[in-house]
Length: 96
Image (cartoon, rainbow, N blue to C red; front, side, top):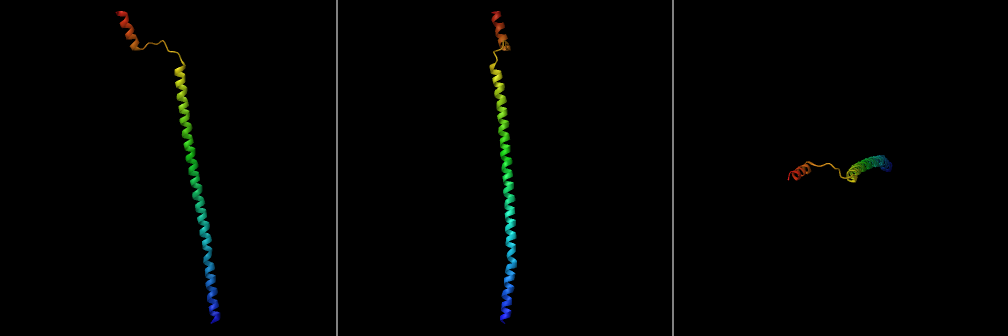
């Protein structure tokens, strides 16, 4: 009877030990999944930051071009061109 009891205890211990290895596999899989998720999140954040920087650079370039065009227009002297309104006024002055 004692031998049967010892045998049952030994079988129970072996079965518990055999089932314990799955926890390590699950933990390894969980760590791999969380690492993959963290990597993809970091990549998405980097892509977003790059896109934002590109938009800022584009906006700065457009603003610089507009400023350059504005400065180019503003630095010249007034032209001697008369507009249609000025011509009409000049004609009226000459007739009177």
